[in-house]
Length: 291
Image 1 (cartoon, rainbow, N blue to C red):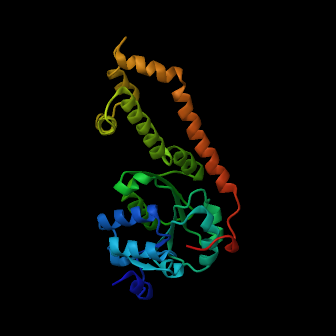
Image 2: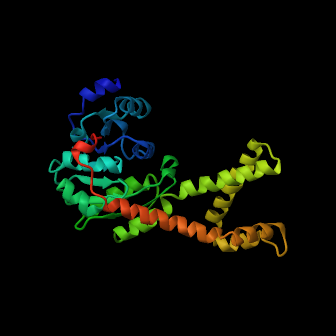
């Protein structure tokens, strides 16, 4: 079946999993749930306005695709995976159209539970924010649910998000926002540091490929050591920092440059900007197209 024919042949049975939006995070979830056998590809329906994106998702993963968001929203569990600027249009489109037993999981950055529940006219919504390591099932996802959510529904949400890596249910949205302020941008921060270390190796005289190997493998090994030993980062740092040694000389430069304080400021800036975005009014139907 081609992507075009699957647009017309939306499954007559109710899909197990529906996606509103078929971007990077949606695709990471699709890969995770199909790879872990939580949902066969034929039980997944993705609503995506971009025809080329529909074709790619269908050919790569065997999922059903459609340009009709309402068809995808008929699923037992619906994932809202559109960009924040598209959320107002999508909420209006789906308003009052969901079945009472539908579970909704929103991974729309900055959009609060009250906005989602009121916008959809639907009482049960989960707000979650996986980070991009979801693509390799190593995400850290913090989430919370609207009041009155049933235990079976929460277990299903936990299974879905757990397929991406580590999932943690927190008490309220403040917890989601604080954790997301730390975990959400972490990949970007780590990649920024990796870039800097590679460049430093090149300045020392290493070929770029060797500087990249030394940096990436050392970073990977350090993370695995931290994970396996369960020792604190401070304890492990001290194990490689001899008094008067070369590593200590480098750490003194980092401390004198205020790197620790700068990292804290960066995280606070992310958290503040996320809260600011969450307070902005949703886009009207006239300001952008749905999807």
